[in-house]
Image (cartoon, rainbow, N blue to C red; front, side, top):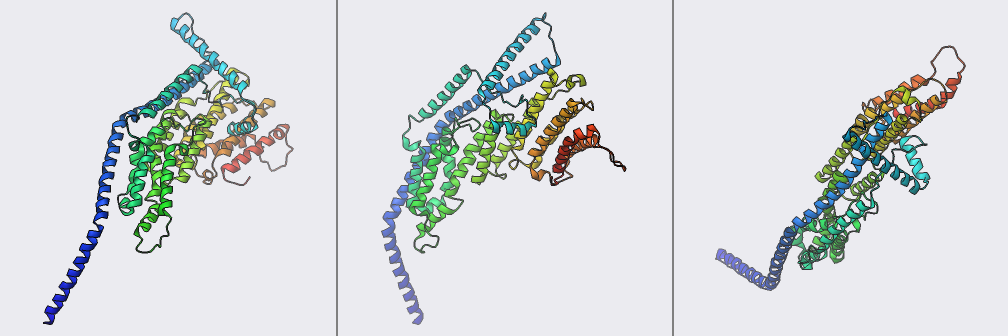
Length: 526
């Protein structure tokens, strides 16, 4: 009897709980029905958005490629002109004379004369337009080590007005096409703000399922075509280019996150147990895997690939201004956005493109001629002037490469800076310059001072952490060259004190400068 009574009580309890569950389910039925209707509505909405964007993607990709092609054409034209000018100046310095009887030679000579006239006209305009700038003069002196002539330090990126107007018209066409690409689409399906508004509604009404669906991780992928459409003409290498955070897409994503903070994302993490929605919203607003990741993921999936294409197509490592803008932008990205890191594949591809561009520039644009002692002995000879110009070009490029310190891997940057540039070109140029030494006279002192100043400019730009290893083989050749100069100019050590000769007294300031350079290369205090 007791057993039957216990079973009866258990059955009655189950029946009561079943009635409560049925009652609760009936009460929740309208809410669940509304949730189901909302899920079906948002599913159809997202499908329509994806279908719309898929249809427009070929046009967006076409406009994107067209803008990159325009940047590449400009860069290729300027670089080809610069290399042709260097070839012409090298022939002039070497005294090459073409046979005018040959029609092809006559045509080549005429083209060379036109290039020279254009080159001199651009140089004259730069001199007239440039204003004396003490800051720039000090920067250039610190870069190339000499004061009198800045030949070779200008990027020479002037273009004819007709070319500029034609390119501006092409970009205007791209902007116009981008503005009208969604003319046949309702704004709700093509405006970032409208799309985010629908997802914000989901987040506010059903925060738990919003988080479970990992919507913050999906939003950058969904919005990528619309973001690409806004940055079609974004080129941070150009002057007066708007910052990436000034575009509408960035403000929309910030507003989306700000809306979360206002609707409960700032709730205390120890909210009452019954207030589950507040806890979910707090997690969405504070977890790096949720709303905080939307903008970094958008930068990774849209801006970094775009920047990689721009670097591959149009970045000129010889340009100080372009390099400065690019490095500043990348440092900003690395400081603010966690997706821009060495472990990120998009970042790795960007840095690989930059390294390839640097290596290509060293191979194609660095040329330091080697002339006879007679040519190099005359500071005003065409050969010596061209030699100085090309040495300035190489040292300017070295300065631009060193701006990438703390961004690129030290081993890769050292290889480019020393193995490919300093050891292969600049030090050989210094050795060629020193071969003209005659051992006496004012010109001898000027020669030593120039070489010492250029060496000081190189060493002064080297990162301090590169100088801490005395056995670094990348710097071994530079250290050895400085040591050889010191041995050549330093007086011989003798047991008997001797009176300094006039030559030794004259070279004493140069010797002090070289020893300071040696101490810095060995990481010793000055």
